[in-house]
Length: 77
Image (cartoon, rainbow, N blue to C red; front, side):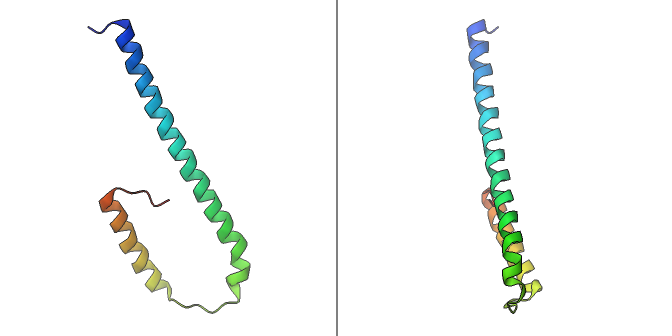
């Protein structure tokens, strides 16, 4: 059996881990919100610009990029 002090230490470690995960999620949420805001604010600017790439090109690029990060366990944001 664990003593009370050992249990408190273990609980503290779990709380720290949870806190770090929450911080990471908040950071990712903020980054996503900034990206959406930038996309929305720039949409009018790019509306009159000619398309350089076709949508099919972008899908392939994102698909390959996602698999690259997924294999290496990186976050996309």
